[in-house]
Figure 1 (cartoon, rainbow, N blue to C red):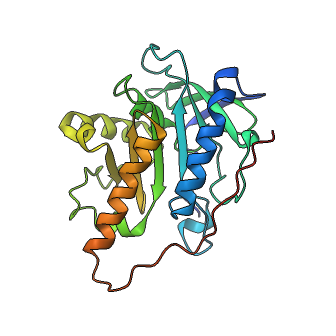
Figure 2: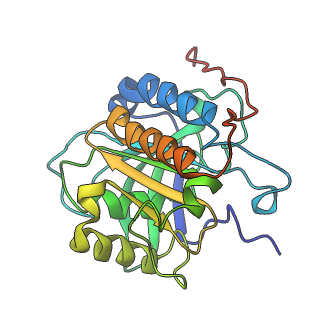
Length: 234
């Protein structure tokens, strides 16, 4: 039975257009998503993760002074990881996330990513956090201990209230200084965050370079993927 890519929270989703603030930041989100996909952190491979698409990106939208549980963000939709071209029709806005109730309220053309609960938990850590990037990268994941990455407990699954609790625990333990953590039970899963999408992505780029430098290989190869196109016409 496939377990990857499955939404594990109660999703109350309303189909509809993106709200104005989400429309305004969509171009930047789609552009950085294309960069991360070109690095191999977002995609789809029949031989990995039960064939499910992997990786997602989000960015907060105003009001930035909203309380925990209501820090709205626009995120790539569920199972869009394998799409070469993404448009605004592949996004949605998470309006509320009730971690204790394991529920997410959203609106938009696409249903929310199965990682939306985890993104919300990261945004709840600090109002200064405005962007989250979740990738799957075997090279960085296998080197997580050597890279001294904060890691979630091995028995905590993705997209659950327990994972939200782990995010909070790691933050209290100093993960905010690294701006990244590994999801031990979510194979190859790495999450970075920052004040901007550029900052969150740069954290991952630096980790990838360090992981390559630490590998035993004498040859470093780029991912076998063409740069995804971004359709901004919608």
